[in-house]
Length: 78
Image 1 (tube, rainbow, N blue to C red):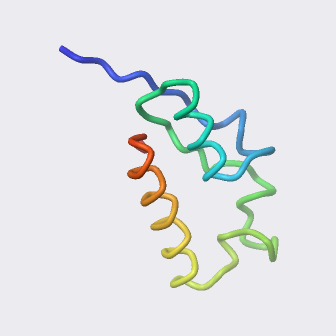
Image 2: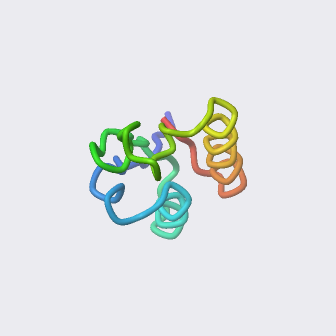
């Protein structure tokens, strides 16, 4: 049975974007990441800079771009 190597992004979300985290994951040789979206400031819908304060279309487009980048790198998002 093949096992995947992954890590949680919780320590990185305060200082790196999701795209940067994917690049880090690829550079250290992981197969997957557990994308943590619990940073209270970064993901607060009251914060105008937060992706959660954007329109439904902008929100979907952003995470579709993240998924596309992950696929290009060969990193699975769990």
